[in-house]
Structure formats: C-alpha cells, structure tokens
Amino acid sequence: MSEPTLPATTCTSVSAQLALPDGTASASEESDPPDTQRLQEAMDSCAQTGDDTVAVKLVADGSSDSFLSGPLTIPQGVSLVLDSDVTLYASRNPADYQIDGSPDCGTVATTGKGCRPFLSASSPNAGVQSLAGAGGALGRIDGRGGSDMLGASRTWWDVAQEAREGGFQNVPRLLQTDGADNFVLSDVELVDSAGYHVYYANGDGFTAWGVRILTPTHARNTDGLDIDGATNVTIANSFISAGDDGVGIKASAQKTAHVSVFGNHLYGTHGISIGAFTTGGVNDVIIRENTISGVDAFGEASASSVGIRIKSATRFGGTVQQVAYHDICIDQVSRPIDIDPFYFDLRGDTTPWFTGISIDGLTATNSPAGAGSRLNGLDSQHPLGLTMSNVRVDAPRVRSSDAKIAADGVTFGGENLELDGDGVTLATTEASPAPMSCVFPPFPGL
Image (tube, rainbow, N blue to C red; front, side, top):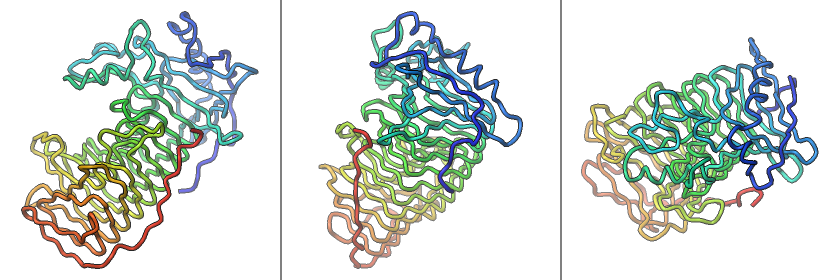
C-alpha cells in the first residue's frame, strides 16, 4: 500500500467563523454548535455516486481557524480535509449525541450504546484527511474528552472512570464507520476523544497513514485505531498516545484478514492488540517495525502498559492464525508479550485458538518492577502455536500453559527461555538474540 494522497478535486471549501484559542466557545455556541448544519450541507452537496472521491475543505479565514459542531455523517465519495491550521471541535452537549430509546448519553448505564459518534460513515470512498503545513502541523479534530460536559461538572473521561464501579459509560466515539469500504484517514491529528478515537467496522479497504492521536494514558477506554470485521487494512507511520489499545484488531462477528501494521510509534497504551473479540476469526496479519513505550506523550507512565498482545475468552473467541511480528521495539512496558485466551475469565461456549503465531525480532528494555510475559493456549486440544527468534526481553518472568513453542535465540532476563507450565512443549536453542537497533522518537510537536 502506498501513501494516500488528497483528492484531486475540491468540491467546496468552508471557511471558519470562530476563533477558539482555548477550545471554549460562548454559552450560546456551546448549547447550539454553529457549524453542524453548514458542514453537513456542504458534504451532502458533494456526495458522489461512483468511485470518485472529492474534498470538502475546512479552511481558516484570517484569525478564524475553528469549527464547532455536533455529530456529522461523511457521505459517499467525500473526504473531509482540514487545512493544517484548522481545528474542528466536537460538541460538549450530550444531547447532541443522544440515540433515541437508548441510555442517556453522558451517563453510566447497563449498556454503553446511548451516544452517536462525532464523525460517522457507512458509504464507500470516504475519508478524513489533512495536509501537513509548515513545521509538520496537521489539521486537528478535538473530542474535548477532558472538558466538562455542557451543564455538568464532570467530563466524558469522568464518566468512563465511574463505570469502573459497574455498568458501561455512554460517551461518543470520535470517528466510527460501518461498511465504509476504501476509507482513508491520513495526516490528521485526533485529540482527547471522549471514547474510542477510531473504530473501523465491517469494511473492505481501510488506510490510516501519518495519523497522530494525542490523548493521555489515564483517559480510560480511549483506544487509538481499532478495526473490527475488516479486510485489506493498512495502519502505517502513525503516532498514537491513548488510554487503552493503541492499535486494536478485532473480529466481533465477521472475519478480519489481510492487515499490515508498520512504522508506528505508540506511547502509554495497551499496545498492539488482537482481540478481545475474535469470534469471526483473525488471519494474515503482519506487524513490523513498530515502537511501543509504556510512557505516554506527556510523560505519564501507563498503569497497565502492554507491548504485543493477543487476548480473547470463551465468551467471544475464535481462531487467530498467521500472525507475524517483525522487529518490534518495546520500552518501559509491564507486559512485553501477552498472549492469553482467558481475558477476565469471561466464559462461554466459543473457542479462542491462537496458532501460527511468529515473533522474529523483538527487544524489550527498561521493564518496570514486576513486569512479565504470558504465553498461554486454551487447552491441550487448542494449544498456542508460537515460533520465536531473535527475542530479547529484560524481564525474566514468563508464564505459559498449553503451548507448543519453538525458540531460537530467545532470552528473558538474560537467560535462555525455559518453561515448565502444564501442557507446554518447548524446542529451543541456546543461540544469542541478534542485536536490534531501537530508537523511540518523541511525539511530534511536543
């Protein structure tokens, strides 16, 4: 997959009418976001019927460089393109996102399906993009997850924290698609989402390239880039600081396959994760040349950092196979390698089976006290099938069960891998891991 470009044709440009240097508008503007209708009308008037894609550009006008909107739907053949000096702010009003007949948006309830996403798409050949400006500046979409909801003294993130005590938070995702084939997300900055930043579901053809996600690690359940039931996916050259999975690869109902994740840098996340929903099956995934740090872009260490992870449970499990990791650099992470089919011990009648997994080139350094890895299969009939080579993890602790593992040049805590868990078969050599050169770049612009 090559780097995406902007649409050759601009259908229309929409000029900013607001200047919000601190991200806060007037009371009347906050209660009735002034740009919702005109942005939606601009995109609807540019919708395409064929395979073409045109741009709807958001541009600054003098000192006015801000847009404030409620939820928007991106139609077929339209890419919403932000100039590098423009910010699109999401409404803080829960009523703007409310789904009729569902739990109140902005509350904790027995389900978490009360809010519409800020941006949504369900038609092909759409996108959200920006063009880098001087000094690498990108157009920004700000979910304002850390700001008080309108009429309340708590933030969207506070609601998510409250849900730890039971129930589900009802907060909007920043961008969600369903069935939007050939969706492009490129060179745009996504900031402070209330919930998941990006959720691409049930589509064929998704490219995320040069994306910057900038949200603190303590913002609960703010996944970076998630795909679910997706095929032909590329996630590349992006910087992701978020409060949950940095990259999440799921298969809730439909198969996810033909996925490439390369050249990305993650900060303070739960790592590059497959699962927990794998019911539809995951196969043909290549994850290479990524860096994963347990400290977020603001310098805060994650309380539950992960490097590479495959997770599921018998409540929503399926087969995960043909997954290849190459040249992964991990630093200051509590669980460098975490492969486990017993996610929160959520029980059901499905079969999470991880097989054909390979790790060729992985280095984990500066692991915090108590750090460890897991290499678990489900049972003797569905063992983990794992091949490792050139792997060096400084944390010595490894737990394993029901696994068939071949290891060549693999050390944990400076010693060759040794495992004695139930149902574990280990074929290993005493070769030393090949040296890897790891560079962990700072988050751009900070």
